[in-house]
Length: 104
Image (cartoon, rainbow, N blue to C red):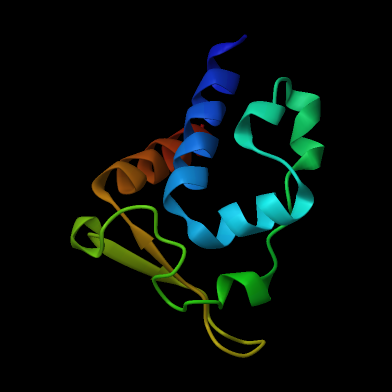
């Protein structure tokens, strides 16, 4: 198994354990994280809609305690209610790295 897939699986397991909304969506589809064995299996995962993201708005999708949220990112809300995403220090660092990589 390649490193990126291992990291993905770790995150999927964390989301399954800590995010009740996404866990419910997976259960509805009859899958658990262990069913995702290769990249191709990602097709089995449920799609998340804007309506899903607005459930338990704005912090219902957080996988960390609110105390670990250091910054919020918000969409403009041009199609209705803006979406708000909480970012941890780790999320902020990953975003910086991604921006730096894409700027090359």
